[in-house]
Image (cartoon, rainbow, N blue to C red; front, side, top):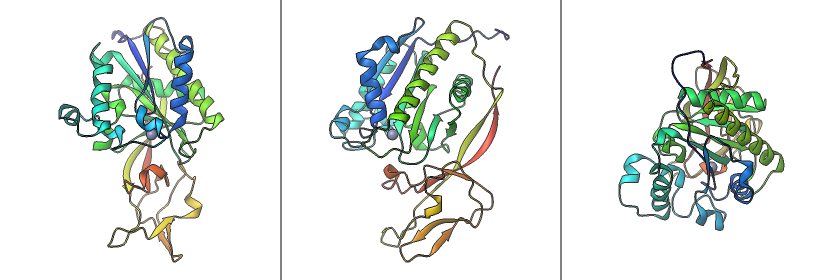
Length: 300
Ligand SMILES: [Zn+2]
């Protein structure tokens, strides 16, 4: 230890799969760990395994009535539940948050994307622990990218927001309802590395991290082009498909209409889009999220 602040000991780590029922990587990893708990057991904390939305897993859909990963705002949790997912969110809140104060809980929430997200770590906040964990994991696999949503209601109502500590692992591209062995294994190794990081941190042995990371900070959500009736009028421009984390310059085509006309990016600065053409976001009318990379210092 180099500074005077003692590290906060993490007493519980929750590994969560099936927050979205058609994202199978997390579902099958949690099932694997349930059958072999020694893989995720460590000496300084308790590991808890959770299939967050079992009914949606059963029918292999993102959700049954409403998106569970938008049900965790404090105000939502405190009002009477009217849907299955709202009820489930309250159960999960009780399950994860009643035994010990939330500061001692770390949540690893496992997701997949149909976009080319590679191995994306999504931070809900820039707590120094989360930044160090993400920085450490970026040394485990060079494909790791670190992303933070534009501060919005959606990021404060995600399951991971039940604790200030932890992150979501969002891997892709993989279709909904499909397993991709390589992404499954890469996710699995990131989980082991995260658990080892927490174990070492709990023991006061600060794992070596890079001194800075690149954080892709969300700056804008881009909607699909639609007509006055709300009907789609275009699609993601072909050259932009699977180009997540690559630069998009002012004037570059973003969409092509069904008539073959290009719609260009009319911003003034170069951006780096992610979640391009994510299947689950059509209903949210999100065609992509624009980010700007920033260099973030990491506590030694
Ligand atoms: Zn998801």
